[in-house]
Image 1 (spheres, rainbow, N blue to C red):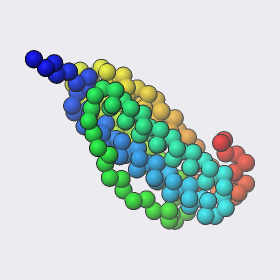
Image 2 (image 1 turned 45 degrees about the vertical axis):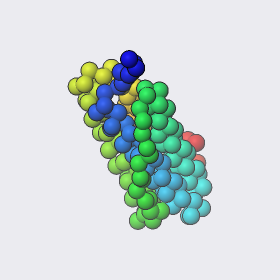
Image 3 (image 1 turned 180 degrees about the vertical axis):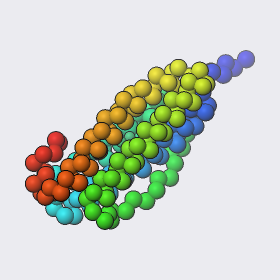
Length: 163
Ligand SMILES: [Fe+2]
Ligand SMILES: [Fe+2]
């Protein structure tokens, strides 16, 4: 008799992680759009900051991809929404980024709830890194928003950016 391996993570969590690949790649594209908004105004350090953030989001997607492969899940890549490079202001761009980071945090919290409810400790363990990462991402976006909202000249503010 062929031996069908037991899936390592719960199917409910696997489904949510497959969707999360799309959210991370969507965030990747949204950060590319914000970086481009700044680059178009010659705010090169602001652009570099958000392009760097975009690269991190791609890494997040890849981390999930590798995990799903490791646990033996089959999946396709979801469609990602278009991202506009047009924002009302720098504050508008950064506050949208903060809003996305908060919603990604909720997505991981809801996945952690699913993992616990399903008794899926492998999946729960995997989510820990993302939960910690989200605390950092929300906090740094809050700081950038405070900097933009302070009314400081954005060229002068580049000296304060940690890249
Ligand atoms: Fe992310
Ligand atoms: Fe993020």
